[in-house]
Amino acid sequence: MQAVLTENKDVYQQALENFDLAANALGLEEDIRAMIKYPERELTVSVPVRMDNGHIRHFRGYRVQHNTTRGPAKGGIRYHPAVTREEVAALATWMTWKCAVVNIPFGGGKGGVACNPKELTMGELERLTRRYASGILPLIGPTQDIPAPDVYTNPQIMAWIMDTYSMTKGYTIPGVVTGKPLTLGGSLGRGEATGRGVYFTVDSAAEHLRIPLRGAKVVVQGFGNAGSVAAHLLDSAQSYVVAVSDTRGCIYNRDGLDIPKLILHKERTGTVLGFPGSETISAADLLALECDVLIPAALENTIDGANAGMVKARIVAEAANGPVTPEADRILESRGVFLIPDILCNAGGVTVSYFEWVQDEQHLFWEAQDVYGRLERVMKTAFNDVLKVHRERGVGMRVAANMVGIGRVAEAVRLRGLYP
Image (cartoon, rainbow, N blue to C red; front, side):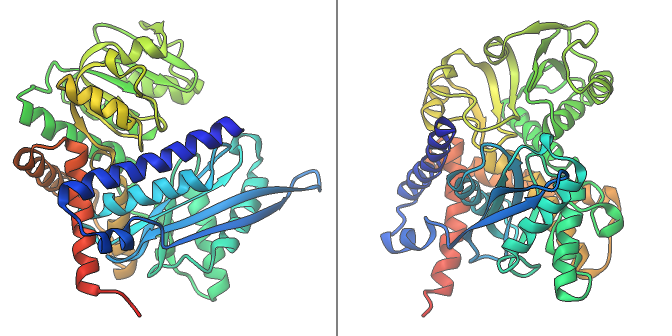
C-alpha cells in the first residue's frame, strides 16, 4: 500500500509541476499563484459500514474542492483501493483547469473512497455510498459542489447520493449530482460524453495535422466507457482500431478490430481477451505499435520516462486523467508527437455534466442531438483556443491548455479580489 501512496503523492506533485510551467509561461504574479495553486478545502471522512455478515468495516473517504472562483466545485467520485487524499487533490486541481479550458462556470472538485467495490454486495455498496454522502454533506449541493461518476461509480451510486442529500433537505434536489439515471433528472448523452469529447478533439487534431481519419490506425489503452465510445466513433469514421486493452490484457489485429462486435464480446465475457480474430500482445507492445492515434484511457502515469521513447503514435489523446508524466511529456514533444492533454481531451464528461445541471435547474430537458451538437461546439472551440496559444506562444499543448485554464481562473480571481 505504501508504494501506491507514494505514486499518488507523485501525481499531486505532477499537478503542481504542470501548474508552475503554465504559470511561468503566463508570467503569473506571485499573489495570484498563492490564491489559486492549492485546494480551498480538503475533507477526510470516516466511513463505517455494516457488512452483510453483521460486522462493521471501516473505510476512508475524501472530498476536495480545489477552486470555486468561477462557480460550484465539480468533479467525480471514485471507488478504488488506491484512492488517497493526494490523488484526489491532484484530480480536483485538474478539474479546475479543465472546467476553465472548456469555459463552463464550474470550479474543480473530486472525491473518493478507498475500497474495492468488486468485493462489495449491492447492499454493502449502497450503505457505503449513503454513509460517505452523509459525511461529505456539508460540502456538497447544487450551488456548492456537484459530484459525478468516476472510476467504479455509476448512475445508481449517483442516485443514492442524490436521495441521501434530498432526504436530509426534505425535498427532491436532482441538481446535487450529475450522471444520474434519466428517470431522476439525468441527461441524454451523458454516458458516452467523455468518449464523444475525445473523438471531437482527435478529429480536430487530425484536421490540424492533415491526417485523414478514414484509414487512420488507432490504438486504445483502456477499453472502458471512454475508450470504447471513442473507439466506436473512430471506427464509424472508418479508422482502423488495431489494438485495445483492458485490465486483463491487450489484443491486436493489424487489419483492424470489429469494434461493435468487440463491445458485445466484452459485455458478454467481461474482457476483450479471447475476441475472435485477435492475437494477445503485451502492454508494452501495445504502447509501441506504429499508429496515427494512441488513446491512453486507463489510469494515471501509464506513459512515463521509461516507455515514452517507444511510443510511435503521431497523436496521443489523453482520455484518462494524467496518463502521461511530465518526463514523458518532454520525450514525446522532442519526438514530434502531438499531444491532446487530458484537461482538454476528456472534458466532454464535465461539459455534459454541466448540461445536465442546467437542465435540472431549469426543469427542461434536451434531445440527444441538442446535447451532441452543443458538446461538439464546446470541444472544438476549446481545442482551437488551446491550439492558438500553442502556435502563438510556441509551447507544448499541455502547457497551452494549462495557460488557457489557469489564465481564466486567474482573471476571475483578479476581478473578485480577496475577501476579507
